[in-house]
Length: 363
Ligand code: M6R
Image (cartoon, rainbow, N blue to C red; front, side, top):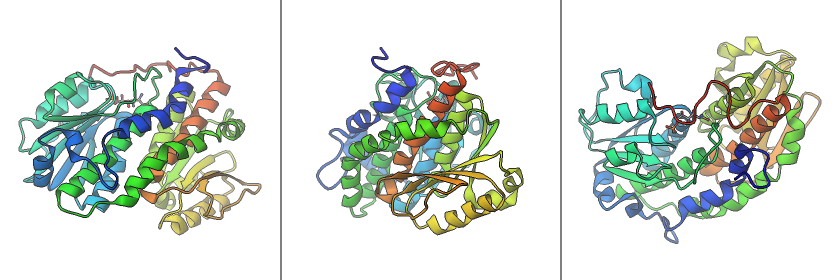
């Protein structure tokens, strides 16, 4: 039941600290990751893994886009990520030693399942499903699986399923790295253990985000900007807003602004950006200046250390400091809350948006 919450979506957003803990439970040692969480054959398979192909749809696809940055940076493994409906009709070239990974909350998405069946006819070393539903078709048909443990997700707009997928994908990154004989990453392990409490802190911004949402209710368009692993977070923020508030939203890697979308920016265009404290921050700040110079209204979720402050044309909400690797998880939360409150203001059917189904079991 929804309990004290007005919608399932809100309840599921607030469950994230607990389900993130559940997703980590028993899968870490004090200083490293337990590779066997992926099953008895995982270590041998990851040792052979030289490339990773990731296939998913929608929000799950955005999780795949995040782990590309992680696997490349922390495990040194090249990654390709693609939406299932495209992948299954290509003629993919599969280099020796490629692991096939599907991401799906339901494990029943028709295109993702078809992509897995197609992949079995190709030269992969094995298949891994990261999924929220034990016993689903995807899990049954994959060589290995890891459950995200998000619990039932009722809201059509995926929230806790996404952040727990990211946890599973960080465990995958650390496991592949370990299998390749690279040193463990104790700082990331520590940061994972601290993450539920940090998420709880960010959820405390709910009331402020609700106030912020008033600036969006009358808008017809919105632009989301992020860089690096936060580009997919911007995509996910835009998808949430589209899905439940029916406001047209687009996301760009901030460096692409000048290459076209800047033409859209005027005082009617809200621009939402996530600004964690990472090595792309200075670049992002100059992108935000480009928006301000065109009269755009900026809404920035920023690390408390980055030194951007609210002014007439820019509203800043501060997030606590977080290990750079896990910032994509933390910065997802305010974007979920923003789209939720905008949808509530607009009076849409938040949990059951028009034209959409929770699980897309037809092509
Ligand atoms: O069950 P899956 O993760 O395979 O579903 C994939 C997409 O249909 C799903 O993520 C969809 O994009 C959500 N409604 C997004 O909120």
